[in-house]
Image (cartoon, rainbow, N blue to C red; front, side):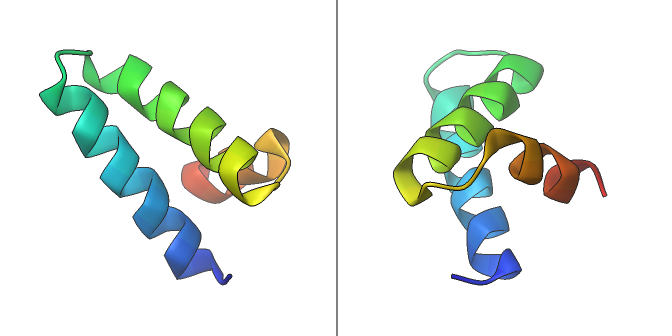
Length: 52
């Protein structure tokens, strides 16, 4: 899985959470956590990737 696939997965989950009624910041945090769990990537690395 490359960087673009990880970012795409985060974006898709974030959009799903937003459509579910969660605010944008909270949706991003939940999406990062879900992708971290789903793909076994440390949350710290995902946060660095998203914030870069």
